[in-house]
Picture (cartoon, rainbow, N blue to C red):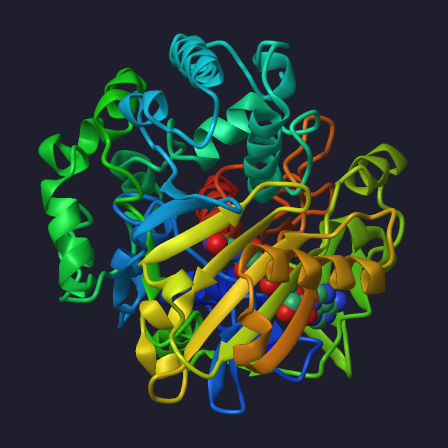
Length: 493
Ligand SMILES: Cc1cc2nc3c(=O)[nH]c(=O)nc-3n(C[C@H](O)[C@H](O)[C@H](O)COP(=O)(O)OP(=O)(O)OC[C@H]3O[C@@H](n4cnc5c(N)ncnc54)[C@H](O)[C@@H]3O)c2cc1C
């Protein structure tokens, strides 16, 4: 019987990133995944010649965020990122760029002029408060706005809230919108990161974290945009100093730190898998049914058989931890139970030809009545569809009080209203219903801590960190895991 130094439960992006980092610190690691495939929500697959992702994805915070830190230090191969372009808003009559700075808001003609001024004032106030230390994580977006706005403007703000947290503007915090829309940033400084990973023997090609690998892996337009952006004009070290936020608001040109991985989302997963040393074993179709604890300390897990280890990293739903661990303290289990989740619906439409409606690089929101976030991903990489065809993903948040069937029907109606006659060109129709993040960041929702009451049992994943979103958030959680393991003396043994 092999005893592992670490067992990782779950092979989603957080699980494989945890396995990669631990193995590069010299540990032998077993990863147990209950599904037949690895990657969880970070995946792509092919249907009738179209390659769909598990939801429309934009990877954020690529210049100095946690994913970049992990890629620089632990990846042997880094995916190429395409420019994610701009965000647009579509209505029955208009298609306009969504502003990312104050100047843009003033001229954002899709909303009434008086509302634009009110929004600009509210954003400036929130950023200023946040910059000088006011915690806006318990203040709702709705409460940060004046009561005089038109329905269109509330619908627009509600749509942005839904896509940043999965919940309405009354349940989403102002902090979430400021960070999610890149107006202010959570990040990991070089000093913080290097303090943790100092003892790793870095491969030759990743000399220094400051020496960016990314620009060489960015498609030319994205690299050019980074080079020209406000961001590249200031030293990386001061990029995330709070005092730059207001300057950023006035000057930023847009989504300059975001990318779409060429060849699809699975490229990110593949880059991690490619970088795994031979000391990592992955077993699929191995559901962990019990985490074994002796005298308050983790000793292994029970899946298809018993596996023993010095530590266990659990990346399944933290909300369900008490179903696999006996005798968790009651208040701790109750807190995990308070984690809020939402479901999303993605509709992928494979189109027989490229439509004029999607003649842009980026993504769009529809905010009237039922809202969507849509992304024509073949505009990033035409190889994701058969020649001259187009693939578009439409993301919706599912109302928990309605049936999936009625929500799906309503979603199709919204698409047909937003893009008249699109149904005539549909060759592939595919739906995905998923929980995009294991915890929705709402005002009252809980977030789990990386450390648990059981010694050497740790949590990682999108429900153990509230910073940023999706894969960036998963990467934040793994950086936090490394920090905690280092503090506990479990990283560098
Ligand atoms: C529609 C949609 C749009 C999205 N858009 C974006 C975006 O634009 N940008 C972005 O960065 N992110 C986005 N995301 C989110 C991102 O894909 C996820 O947040 C991320 O992939 C989640 O990673 P995770 O490892 O935390 O969780 P998961 O992917 O859920 O992985 C958990 C894994 O653990 C396994 N598991 C659970 N319990 C057990 C057990 N007991 N035993 C064994 N295995 C177990 C599961 O099977 C799963 O494989 C989007 C997601 C969706 C669905």
